[in-house]
Length: 442
Image (tube, rainbow, N blue to C red):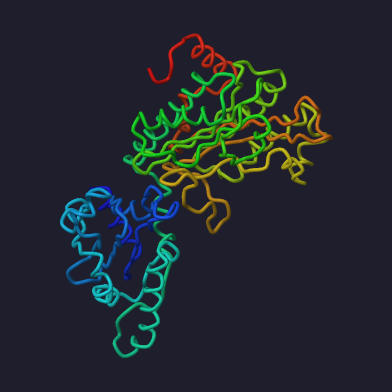
């Protein structure tokens, strides 16, 4: 638990004379009385390593006795028999290393004792609606009493301004966790290439990917797995995954495993037939060139949303011109953004405890430069609509290639490098899988 204690200490140092309160994620209903599988709020877990619901963390450096407190569910043998073990008050203290733990039922009575210690409150509104109302009421009360008592917060700040900057830079422990999540994500993609066969449905490929995630210890997919083919290829976040994969179609798999609150996020596009057609290969090579160019520029001092993204977009536009999907100059299309009919989304995003991870892309000077410890995705894509003014041979084709990249003091570290992405390497991987008659589950 040392890393969680260090994070709390780092946050407290940065927030200064204040008190911070962090609620756990709420439990959500899937249907009627059936819940959605619980997943802790990333900020809460980052500071505690505690994954139970109905919990609240308080950091109060000005408190005379308890600088860090965790309110949790009490142990309850009857309830645990139905829904699993609880750490309980004593177990939570041993597990997290906070100064004190209390039953969650005592939060209302003890809250003022912590709030009275500081003039500023850091609190993330929108995580727990019930606690939001309680905090608003306390703040209203302090407005009328603070002039005489001299106690309690006069202002509320968003802890994200501190905490999300902390999360943006990965420690050695974070990097190790990210490597494992991305490695397991890659195994799922390799299995899809090896075991998918013509005649399968999209959901069968999804099942291959997610079986391998689970077999290797992932708690869940990091996000709904995308397996798209045929007419669905142009839908960026298609995750229905119900259609049969048409003969000759490309299959785009965008999938990542979540392992101990670290997320992978990889996309590969490959032919269900095992061989790219001429048109598929033409588009694929354009996207691959943009992916490679962007990764080359993932260097300290380069800006993600200018140097990296702009260079990749130029490669895409020049490629579109080369195959006749655009006419004119690359500069003209980039200036007028006419290429966005085919490119649609940005080149990538931060990656970490959340798939679209936290942290600002801008600072006071504009687009912020990359720094060692950041992890980004690089995912250029081309999406060609099935429309009359598009050359017929390209209609309905889409390609996306996504890698996970750690920024270092030197060359970029491609965490997903084990998953083949050249067209030749993909064809070889598919061929090796089909050369054997073994099933995925032997």
